[in-house]
Image 1 (spheres, rainbow, N blue to C red):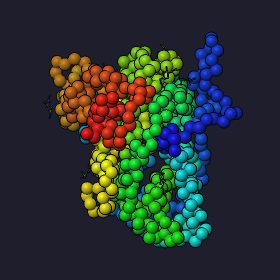
Image 2 (tube, rainbow, N blue to C red):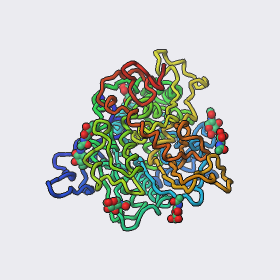
Image 3 (cartoon, protein in one colour):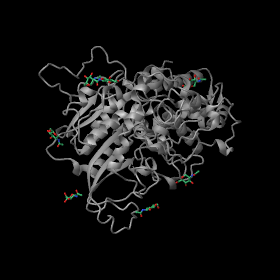
Image 4 (cartoon, protein in one colour):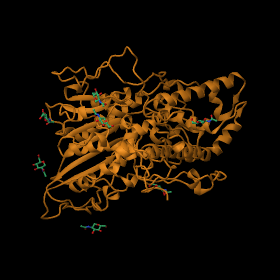
Length: 578
Ligand SMILES: *[C@@H]1O[C@H](CO)[C@@H](O)[C@H](O)[C@H]1NC(C)=O
Ligand SMILES: *[C@@H]1O[C@H](CO)[C@@H](O)[C@H](O)[C@H]1NC(C)=O
Ligand SMILES: *[C@@H]1O[C@H](CO)[C@@H](O)[C@H](O)[C@H]1NC(C)=O
Ligand SMILES: *[C@@H]1O[C@H](CO)[C@@H](O)[C@H](O)[C@H]1NC(C)=O
Ligand SMILES: *[C@@H]1O[C@H](CO)[C@@H](O)[C@H](O)[C@H]1NC(C)=O
Ligand SMILES: *[C@@H]1O[C@H](CO)[C@@H](O)[C@H](O)[C@H]1NC(C)=O
Ligand SMILES: *[C@@H]1O[C@H](CO)[C@@H](O)[C@H](O)[C@H]1NC(C)=O
């Protein structure tokens, strides 16, 4: 397997070269006319896609699962199947980046606070993940092959009993890489929600630039969002820029495509080894059990993992999946943690190019907040300078910014901002050392899937995940320890002050947690904008884009890197395992 496939195979993109007869819409520049930057049809660079079978939930839905008293209607997904050990918890909140969108009740450590009367939200910057999708090309090849194996085995006399007996009637019907119907809904609903929250910030009669990439699900996520925010004639209000998503093209919205090391270095076992150990551990008990139910077929760890992935994918594509109830709640926590390992290692603080992958969007954000030109040098980010130095394609005077990107970019952006509150991935020793797996026992508390750690992909990057950044102008400083009942929120005799407020999936991310020296503790988790910007002026240098993307460095083992940059030439492992 080549590195390219490893990186790109991370369920992120399935871009393949467009067919020779496809029309290229971008850039037909003549010296005198501006290209039509905002033309998005016919599509180009949309990646490999395929549609799947139409759902038939009215016919396939087995609800009410025995007890009519607990019947819940599908909304639109059927997620009420009984799960062993779930109590009141929902397995669909524990599927890593394959979790359907939901705002988390537990938040990120601070309460939500209302804007104090007299202050105003003046800007909102949105970075949005696409909605629920079918498996990417690589995943879909794997899952389709897996399904073929079953069909073959059954044709040769394999028999699956009890809870696996449905396999005799099951077939694989998913498409590839495009949004599912639920995925369109994710973005439309978010457009509606964001209109309620921020509609006032749009000035009637203006046309704002929103950005996405050319990949089919990215373009359509943006369009569905904009239809929800405005209406079907959103293009009266928005110029939508679809940046080319393809290897060697620059864009902040899929920056690894412009990062040579991400594409050419051999990352090989870096994430695969700990991931495989984790799967062997958390799925061993279930795999033995399912193997007992399989005759003339050896049910393996991979079978168990694929079955979990199918639960997630079938649910968002077809509304219900018979694979979900095969697993107990803690095995869903184990599944989710497998994605935490994956994203920490490929995009976050445990990734040597984690900061580099997110820094371009951070630099764009700074130019927008400061309402100035984009000045970051070519060699220190993946920006498309043709677009970013043109005010037509990169205006910095808007009050609303809508950008659409992939899960990995959201994680890398948090990393490049330096949100070290998400650097804490707990890594049990047996994942990174040569010690053999401890004799797996679900009773051994030491090896339960970690819970309540802050780097949870299910919480940060479910389908339809979003980062909303508000800029708030206040007539005075706001009391740092305000409570929900404070009548007088302002500190007397203090000047007008701007604040920044970060929300991930509608919950506040407290800024003092990662930047305690500059963003002093605040009960509302906000930070004075000037203080936050002062911190961020150092982020570009910390990201070491040139070194990370073009330099020569040793990869080390998983866990050695802890600050989103390579171990440096002196072997220093900032934040990493000693
Ligand atoms: C920048 O974007 C423009 C417009 O999509 C495209 O024509 C050009 O090739 C891009 N440049 C790079 C280096 O990606
Ligand atoms: C299990 O899946 C992994 C990752 O897809 C693959 O590398 C490995 O070869 C598979 N193992 C078996 C026994 O099929
Ligand atoms: C594209 O990014 C590279 C860095 O990877 C930079 O050197 C180059 O100037 C950029 N080109 C454009 C047109 O933005
Ligand atoms: C931003 O500035 C440009 C050119 O100066 C102007 O055409 C556009 O209307 C402005 N946009 C907003 C949202 O004010
Ligand atoms: C995790 O958080 C939940 C909700 O905040 C809490 O009920 C639970 O006790 C915590 N679990 C652990 C192991 O800390
Ligand atoms: C907030 O907006 C109101 C209404 O436009 C305005 O009167 C007030 O001065 C603004 N406050 C600040 C702090 O900018
Ligand atoms: C706010 O609370 C923190 C911690 O509880 C305390 O250290 C600080 O002095 C308080 N600040 C003010 C202005 O009351």
